[in-house]
Every structure is written in structure tokens, then in C-alpha cells.
Image 1 (cartoon, rainbow, N blue to C red):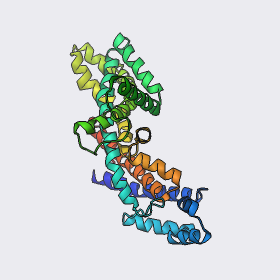
Image 2: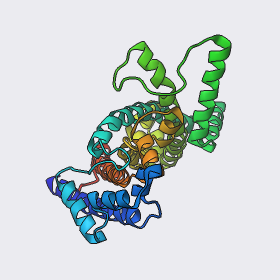
Image 3: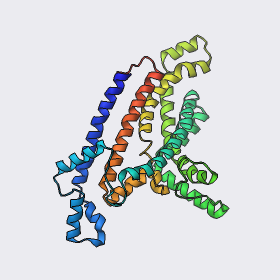
Length: 319
């Protein structure tokens, strides 16, 4: 286990270094000039030269990148170009709790509903239960997440107008607090996030379970007269979960940065909306920081999925 963790941590360093270099080069050669974006109507040649010098943008690219990496070693992502009074790390601290909360609850809904629904469809294959569940999942799967979010908003507006519901349409309550007013803000975005993932997990769980149920050892267990519940939960379920763990690792890795469309449509001030605003404003320090955050999440998520593999199937060894 220790050797595995050390190898993954070493790999993580190379991944972060590679991502930092790619995002830096993309920003360096981008046609969007962040200083021009910052100055706007207040542009003068003198102020333009002064700001480029203050931000070190007049230096060669390799010197700029070296300074950037050195600052990263001190967890210093620099200052936002669009909002000079704020450090990037402070912007991330504001957005991470919100994005993590959206994705955590949304992922729990996805797992608690999607996987059991898929397993049930496999066990009841070719029955009305299977057909109804898969038609519903297929409809959700065919709809992009942002379309589901827009439909949800329209439904809330209709209910507010016709039923005087008074339900909030946008924004987010206080992070990780659950008064009734906070729940009203959070419920619909979380359900939309969960619905977007439900269909994929349900279909994948059904396919995986059906494949396992066709194996010879399952036929042997049935021939021996074992109860169907024992066959499903003790013998089939573990192996059916293995493909799901791979997807789960990616989902865990995107807990912080995976709610872009939710935050954009519901105007939630998380990492996703922060990144979108940074891209439109040419705020490269923020873009680079969120890219590194996403890369870190994916690598950690894959590490967690590898560990879960060994728990579900002890035959798999970490190496």
C-alpha cells in the first residue's frame, strides 16, 4: 500500500507539472490580452506598459513559468488580474465549499438511486419494471444536463406564478447549512445534478449486472438451489460493481469542478461559475488554478477507485 501511494504521489506531481505548463502556454499564446481586459476604457499606453511590468508579463515565457512554479510550491497562485485586490487562493476558498456541497449531495443522489435502479432492472430484465426504468433513464440520458436545469427553472417559475410557491430560482444558501431557507435554495440544483448522473449510472449498473448474471458460476449457484437473494447480493453484486467503481473514481475526482452547468444556470458562485467568468475575462491566474484543481481531483479520484477495487475484489492487488 505504501509503495502504491508513493508511486501515485510521484505521478501526481508530474501530472500537476504538465497541467500547469499546458495551461500556462495556452494563456501565454491566447489572443485575449488580460491587461487590455483589465484597463478597458481607461487604457493608455503608459498604464498598459506599467501593468504588464507589474504582473511580469513583459518577461520571456520561460521566466514567467519558472516564477509561476516557484510560487506554486508556496501555494501562491498569484492575484486575480480582473480583481487585483484578491488573491486567487481566496477566490478558490470562497467557491470550493459551494461546489463541493453541490457535487457531494448530487453524487449521493445519483448513487443511491441510480445503482439500485440499474440492479433492479437487471434482476427484473425484460419486465415492465425494467422497461419503465430504462425508458425514464434513456430520456434523462438523452437530455443534456443544462436542458434539465432550464426545465427545472421554468417549472419553478410556473409554480411560483400559479401557486404562489415563493421558491428561489437562482443562487445558493449558506454553504453546508440546512435551515429551511437554505434547503429551498439547494434542493433543485442538487436534484438536477443527481438526475444528470442517475441515467448513466442506472444504465451502466444494469449492463454490468446482466453480464455477471450470465456467467457460469451464477448458473452453478442457481443449480445448487441457492436463494436468489443470496446469488444476487453475495455473488453477483460485488463483480457487477467493478465497472461502476471506475466511473465513481472520475465522479469523485470532479466533485469540486464538475458542476459547471449547474452553477452557470442557477447563478451559484462556485468554482464552475468562477472559471467561466475567468475565461471570459482572460483572468489567467484563476484559470490556471482551477485547471490544477481539476487535475488534482481526477488523480485523487482514480487513486480512490484503485483502493476500492481491492476492497470489492480482494484478488486485485495494489502495485
